[in-house]
Structures are given as C-alpha cells and as structure tokens.
Image (cartoon, rainbow, N blue to C red):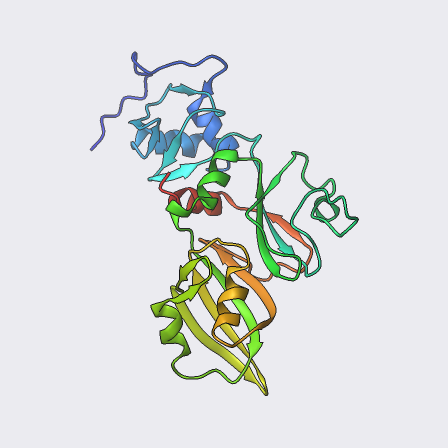
Length: 256
C-alpha cells in the first residue's frame, strides 16, 4: 500500500516551461485535478518511463505520459481526426488538377494543419485518419508495425467456397505475394457479393489488385477500420476528433 506522502519528491526533474502534472492530466481530459492527483498518488501515472509523484512538473509537448499503461497525448497542439472520405475525392490537401480534395471537407473545422495517414484512391471511400503528429503517422504507415486495415468490398459473384482459404494462404501478384488476415462473405446480391477482408498490407491498390487477381474485380470499396479505429456511423464527408481512448489505442498498436 503506497505511503500517504503527498509532498513533492526532491529528485523530480523540472523542465523549462513545465506545468504541474495534475494540471496537464486534467487539461488532457483525464479527469478533475483532484482525481488526477489521486491517480498520481496511487502510482498509476508514469512520465518518461518512471513512476510520477505529486509535485512533478512536465512539459506536455515532450513528456511521454502513461496512465494505467496507456499512452496519453498531452500536447494540445496535436490533433487526431477521422474522416469518412467520399468516393471521387482524391487523398490530398491540394490538387492541381482541379479534382475534389480533402481540404474542401476539412475547411476551418480543424485549426491546425493536418495531413492524411496513408491514402485511399479516388474511387475508394471510407475511413481516413488525419493528424499533425508526424511520429505517429510514420509508425502507422511503416510496414514493420503491421497495422491491420479492414475493407468492405462489392465484387463480382458468385463467391466460391475455397476463395477464403486461397486468400488466407496467399496470392502471388506482380510485385510479390499478399495474403489476408481474415475474409468472409457478408452478403450475396444476384451477380454481385459483399465481402469483408482484413490485411496488414499497404501497397498501392492492394485490395483491388488482389481481388481482381482471383477473378472478383471490385466495383465498390469501403475501408471500415484502421487498427483500433472504426468508421462506425460517421456519415460520408464528415469528420470527427478521435477520443483520448482512441488516440491511446493507436499508440498501443504501434507499441508506444
């Protein structure tokens, strides 16, 4: 049981421009300052890998803070946004060909300048993440972190029984083999079918190329999740801020 000592620890590091830890936690939405003080007292908060103490001061722009093992993004200059990208919109903030672009949907709803995490081709739709956190963006896009993405595809049917096993085993494409992590038939609609597949791959047009290779070209493609973030009921063309729990989940999936 922790000792009831709420006095500052003499060896707690102090940073230039730092603020009291409980104030930083409260500003990040963890709870009231009193509740945050209790979390610190119960040794449930770490800063830069060490257990925090009451009286600690941190720089929210640089400190790596975890609460109950979950990473907390305390820098309020960083924003994390989910968007349901409509079909026909190119994944760029500025298009010199005059096509519909992301900036038209972001507008002034996000004060900071954000960038898309990965891409969806113009004919595809669904979940797209945008942020100004360059470090997290790099990790989410890097193949070594193998962030799972899930898609709902409308394809030419009927779907043979063995297709799932074939996709799980792997299919050879011109730029190398690819296999899915999961596959299921969601619905059949006459000569078309809806299938759901998940994979870690990030190569260009990988889902369309994969399904075309096995004889089921895609007529509609919707990305429904990126790692722990779900598209849910977000309407086409709309954006929303990620919750603190969702941001923590993104950090967790890349091992941060």
